[in-house]
Image (cartoon, each protein chain N blue to C red):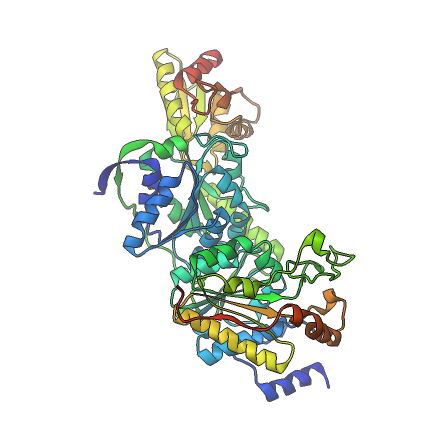
Amino acid sequence: MTEKTEAMTRERVTGRPRLLIPQTAGFVYCPGCHEPLVARAIAEALEEMGMGDETIGVFDIGCNSFLLGMLDIDSVLTPHGRPPDMATAIKHVYPDNIVFTVQGDGGLLAIGADPLLGVLTRAEKITIMMLNNAVYGTTGGQMAPTSLVGQKTTTTPEGRDAIKSGFPIHAAEMIATFKGTAYSARGAVNNPYNYERTREYIKVAFGKQMSKAGFSFIEILVACPPNWHLSPIDSLKWMEEKMIPEFPLGEFKNVDKIE
Amino acid sequence: MGERMFIEGNEAIARGATVADCQAFFGYPITPQNEITQWFAREFPKMGRIFVQTQSELGSINMLYGAAATGIRAMTSSSSPGWSLMQETMSDMANAELPCVVIDVQRGGPGGGPIRHAQQDYFQCTRGGGHGDYRNIVLAPASAQECCDLTQLAFYLADKYRNPVVVISDAIIGRLRETIEVKKIDFGPMPDKDWAVTGKGRHKDGKRRVVEHAGDLFARYPSYQALLLNLDQKIKRMQESELRYEGYKTEDAELILVAYGYTARVSKEAVNMARTEGIKAGLIRLITAWPFPYEVLRQKASQGSRFLAVEDSLGQLVDDVRVAVESHTEVGLVNILDRHMPTDGGMILPDKILAKIEVMK
């Protein structure tokens, strides 16, 4: 089957969310990358909620920025690590819109830790989606705040040594401890069940904005086969055997009112 | 008729922004600009406008990026170290072509420096400040009245060129209390901001808008070269159209002082003292620190005038004066080492300038 007919077959079977922009100029993501699935989950969630016209997406520097080209919504690209600041301002200007960010693990937990703590402190009514692939993907697979102990990266060639460079951050659990957080969950898109569940998490998180409940957060585990030095199939295995045991899936906080 | 009030420069900036329809202010505490942030914190919520105390100056400038992306008029203010922190995003906003206003109430440096007055951010403000090729219009008030009026002008120019505009003040101008008239200046209607990100539902054509600072990634311009060409043309348009300065007794002047901000007021006093001694001195006071009046100085130099830069730094403005006169004539300097006392409370006073004028006459 040619690539074109395969895409057409897929579209006939599953449909294409109207908010998902067809990638006519070629696909930018690596084979086996999970990030395009996140774009689809966001598009489906917004469409089911009927909020596509009322949503503003804020995207960071990194592979996630390509989502900006895939989602047919008003969007802003920010300097590296700063989406929570942008989203804060936009939400204050348009409090009835859904305002979300998409960021990598490095973009949120390393360079972006300052604006993250800012929105948590002020209980901003925005949604942050963090794509956790345990490496810096765009720049060539360096150690990220979420890299597993023992994981070989280009800046931990012998594997991450916990004594020398610490332990992976569990963002969803950490963010759930803040009083201003209304919702915190961790999902994955490595199989249809997890994909469906993650899409529901996204809808719940956006719902927290519509009810003005508080801050909402979703961490989404995604595979990065080139930087994991694994095939797309073996990456799925690594996801099940290494990533999910370290970063368990589920909801860590879900309240209707912050106090 | 505007409202007359006896206020300091920092508050005048806030009042100017308010009558210019600034809808959002983002600020982080830093001396000597705290009066601005506190004024907005107190007054803006009452008006239904936006105030956010940020977690850092990085937060301030990036919230400003977000607010400007929605098309509203928005502002932040800081002082020298905080202004340094903002530079990456200043560069990004120049690329993204976002109109906004940033206030720098200068204090001493380098580093943490003293928290009192100085004029050491001239290069950083007039050369862009961040990475890459870009320029910002830099407005330099020398009175509380100008703090109010030039802040209004800053919003207008930011919208006109879709570019950040900087207001460079200092701790003396910021804390100087004077009687001013707060009056809305009419620059005509605000331009339509069809490019702004508001949610697709608010656009007449129903098509998405994207604000980004990458240029080549999402085809805002057909090529990187096209992006640079647009920036270059914008810089030239600003240079051609937005030069502002005040000439004081320059007609027959044989020695022309060049200064901005608080040292310009001191220089004016020194010119008056020199004139009573029969010395033909004059002053060119920069109202725009960028664009700089190169051509004006060059002409005066060709007519035989000599120049004396007066600035409360080791010497930054003086470089522009030297560039303008192309070594055809003598350029003197009164700088931060000429303060009346060596502590951080020292100021450049008229008698030190007069002494230099007498040497150069």
